Amino acid sequence: MIRKKVLVVDDSAFMRKLITDFLSSSSSLEVVGTARNGKDALDKIEKLNPDVVTMDVEMPEMNGIQALQAIMDKHPLPVIMLSSTTREGTENTITAMNNGAIDFVAKPSGAISLDLHKVKEELVSKVLNAGEVSLHRLKTVNEKTHVSPIQRKLHTVSNSKEDWSRGAKKLVLIGTSTGGPRALQKVVTSLPSKIGAPVLIVQHMPPGFTKSLANRLNTLSAITVKEAEDGELLKNDTAYIAPGGFHLKVKQDRAGLKAVLDDLEPPRNSHRPSVDVMFESASKIAGYDKIAIIMTGMGSDGSKGLVKLKGNGKVKAVAETEDSCIVYGMPKAAISTNLVDDIEPLENIAGCIMKYMS
Image (tube, rainbow, N blue to C red; front, top):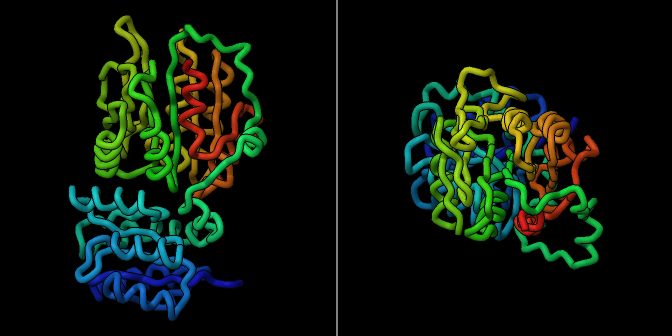
């Protein structure tokens, strides 16, 4: 078996040793070197040619974000960021995700986490997953993808609106995971200020990071983007991101649709929030047509919920095409249900949403 080669980058010698030990415990991984900052990392990448890099966000001389940008420009590789959960740390992590990082792991207790063992399993799993990402796809996603009208037609499964009511109230539902923050930025910032529907978003992330994601998207988007609050009335032209650690559900009463945050229901597909839970909740809402979007992500979260959605009321389902996904797992699982109406590259998804809104 060929092991994936990993470069560990952290300014703390203790953390480098700890991360190396964790990753070396997997028979599928080999730590081929370590680096103490971003500048050192760039030199080691040229010499060691790793398959995956773990990168601390906060480092002296050249920090993780600066190093990540240089890697994506010169030598694109799957990079997993390690971040503290401070406000600055979460904001920097979201920036890193939008600059090309595959995923991240939150350090439990700051820059030097003596209790890093708490995230050992998560770290090993995410590095293993990153090692499976195609370098060709990573390079393609980091370049601007041009899709001709002919190619777009090939990507489209069904554009029929015969069973679709223009006048009905709408609810937009978006689910994503690995590679999602970057995909969400592309889609949400491409939506016009007046959509005519609320947008609910599940992005697999731990507590603390979803607020930074919402704040960043809000500053860049024409619509309002916020972290969802329990019991709040859902408004048109506003996107609500499920807080990390909570399932996002929706309920209906005389006032309209309201957000429900649930931290008691167990994780689904190892995730809380879960796309399946959001979709299943929305399937119970009467009087609204739904537009369900499934984008880049590992695993199959969303596919079972899509079956429930499609079995109750009018639903249009859109999946991101393989060519523009960092990880094709979630869209592929959705497509395998044979319930997806449109398969679109990332840059077309906002337009596809508005096609069904107008």
